Image 1 (cartoon, rainbow, N blue to C red):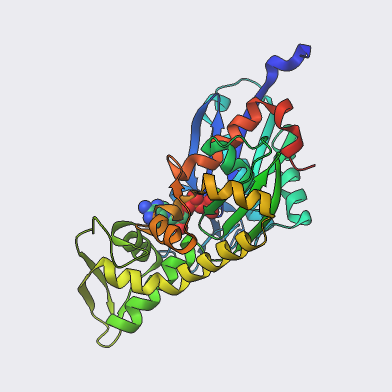
Image 2: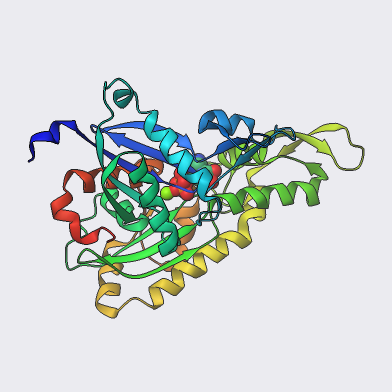
Length: 342
Ligand SMILES: Nc1ncnc2c1ncn2[C@@H]1O[C@H](COP(=O)(O)OP(=O)(O)O)[C@@H](O)[C@H]1O
Ligand SMILES: [Mg+2]
């Protein structure tokens, strides 16, 4: 421990395609949508997180909302750097300090991002006083956050269904043995609902409404044990142009999402088929762990379980499993050095 260590603060960041979470001193201090708003005339990023999310779909020509990591790649380097730095500067305990502390951080990134993008994330973090910056892959952080002992010579399958990507990985001995990242996750489900409403009900709904439908009555199967009540949905009638309301049941949403869920099922089956036999034998006993917001879709666990004939467990608080795991890695950095990305 060095003399100036009291000036170092530790933070763990889950840089998600939909949500960014930060842990500082064992507490989640940031939990915000990964969205920024940019003023088109000045080019400046004016809002970030929840404030920017409120503007989504309601902007005029001078302002634009951007999701810098939308499809699991960094679409806009400048916006993502600003986002990271504004979130870090927003941590209440750091704001109070009379000098900016140097930071030791572990950042969890979507597995699909390239070497160049990884370097960009790291450099962005270094520019906000990151003295020691480590990166970790999402399924690894999810596994640690779920409580899986990843160092064991035992295979575990993790499926993390986020906003932009679904990441599937088999982990053993502190490493990813086989993995797959598909661009079918929460955002695609939302778009499926928009398309369904348009084609089946002539109703034009925005992204925020579609996401609300997904969360309130979304389902992965038409036979749910505890079905949610029908929902009234408002939007614009595509034929008359007038605002209109329709009643929607979860069965319709299950139909709308069926094809996308099939693609996730296929990706899971494919990963299973590439798993070495000894690890497959472990997974037969341990089952599949789900994390990420998308795993909360009603009946998805049951559907995956029927498809794979394996037990499927949803992580406790699935939206926070990854940041939890990232936080644990940060606190035990020496133990987990091997799982961090160099
Ligand atoms: N109850 C829910 N049912 C279905 N989807 C949900 C639910 N809650 C959140 N989501 C979806 O989860 C996604 C965000 O998950 P998250 O794990 O934060 O993604 P990321 O790690 O990519 O940022 C969004 O698409 C959101 O709509
Ligand atoms: Mg995530």
